[in-house]
Image (cartoon, rainbow, N blue to C red):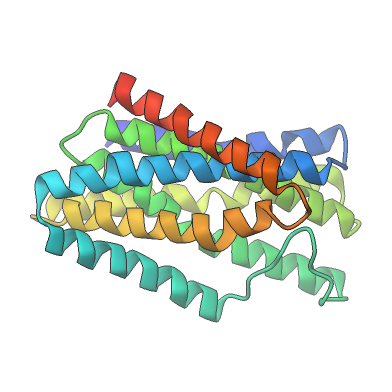
Length: 243
C-alpha cells in the first residue's frame, strides 16, 4: 500500500508541477499546448494498449477485458453527460467569473477520478512495475492539464498563486480514488483484471474524446501528430525497459 500511496501522490502532484510555470508567466503558445496534449495522449495510448490490456488478458479472458473496457467507457460517458465539458482555451459561454471558475474546477476534478483509479488498480496487480508505469503516464497527463487549468483561472483575473494552488488541488482527488481502487482490487478476489480493463477503457476515452481533439483545434495538427507518436514511442520504450 505504501508504494501505491507514494505513486498516487507523485502522480497527483504532477498537476501542480505542470501549473508551476504560471507563477512566472501567464501566456504560452497554442502550439506548445497542443504538443503537450498530444504527447500525453500518445503516452496514455501506449500505457493502455501495451500495459493495462495485456496484463488484464494475462489474468483473465477476453470477456472480462471487454466488460471492463465497456464499464470504463460508460463511466466516462456518464461523467460527460452530467458534468459539462469545458474547453479551457476556447470556451466563452460563461460570463460570470466565479461561476466559470467553479465549473472548470468541478469538471477537471471529476474527470480525474478514473485516472486515480487507474493508478491504484495497477499497483494492486501482480506486475510490480505496472503501478509505477501507469502512475508515470497519468502524471505526465496531469502536468499539461494543471498548466491549462491555472492559465484559464488567471485569464479570469484570479491571483496567480491562488490559481496555482487550485490547479494543484484538482489533482489531489486522484490520491483518494487510487487508494480506493487499490484496496478494492487487493481484497476482492478476481477484481484486478476488471479494474485494469476499466482503467484502459477510461484512459482511451480521455485520449480520443479530450486530448486528441483539443490538440488539433488550433491548426497545429502536424506538430501534434508527431508529438503523439513521440509519446507513444517513449512509453513503449519505458514499458520494455521497466515492464
